[in-house]
Image 1: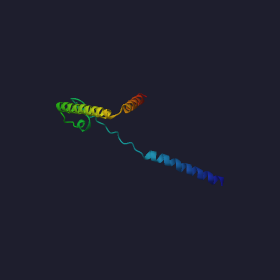
Image 2: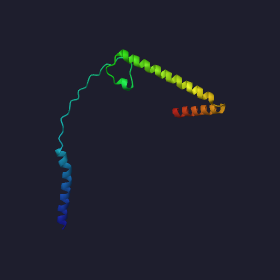
Image 3: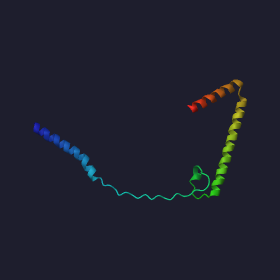
Image 4: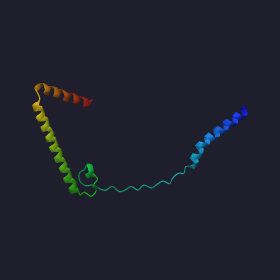
Length: 113
């Protein structure tokens, strides 16, 4: 009886180890593909963002004009945001202004931390 258990155990180990060896033998290495580096296209003009950055056919002059338009829009946005803040602050009571200032200081301290 001990002999049959030993044979069964050795068969189980042999089959189990074959499950590891056979797949390893069956794997063939694929030949390495050559990766050709494409030459970087020289971009003249300012760095752009969004969909305009993906347009490869833009001239340097177009890139400069797009950048100017974007900077103008950002300045207008800041001006409008500042005006909004001033208009809303004008509506607040003195106590609310103090509360608002305390909130701004707490936010600034949290950002530093």
